[in-house]
Amino acid sequence: MQPEPLICVIDDDEAVRQSLEFLLRTAGIQVRSFDSATAFLESLKDEKVSCIITDVRMPEMTGIDLLRHLNEMKADIPVIVITGHGDIALAVDAMKMGALDFLEKPFDDELLLSAVRSALNREKEAAKHNAEINEIRDKLAALSNRERQVLEGLVGGKANKVIAFNLGISPRTVEIYRANLMTKMAANSLSDLVRMAMIAGILEESKGHR
Image (cartoon, rainbow, N blue to C red; front, side, top):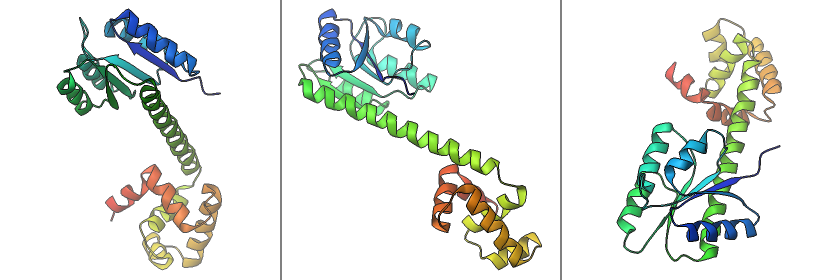
């Protein structure tokens, strides 16, 4: 089972933290809050964080510094930046550094919840995509070397006769390998096979071998 999404709120203003905690918990979303970006980073290794909501202006480490640090760590966590009046230029800088969205205080509760849901949906889609890639790679690993060669020929747009000539086997043998790999890959059609190859990066590899 996938763990419940966890939202982390980072703001040095206790009233803002409490308000966001209440809003998110009322919406049925798990939340933890931190009074500084430093405190959040210290806890990051122990938590699977789904989304970060951070103020842009904070002592010690600003929201911009936090984004820079997350980029250096290659931590792919959606970040929503909240700003005070007059901090729009900082918010734009945050967006350039990969922030998903920014909201100006005082913000509408529903607007914040909508931004959080967008972030969570992005994470779900990414997890689904990664699971699909892993499943396809497992299927590819089960192919024999010859089946893999035929697959690369097929996704490279080559006819059976051309694949047969290149591999030094008969077109009939290519057809047998093709049928086998379609079964092993659970592909319904050649287009389905090509789609899987694109997801796993095989199509680019086969182009490189031309």
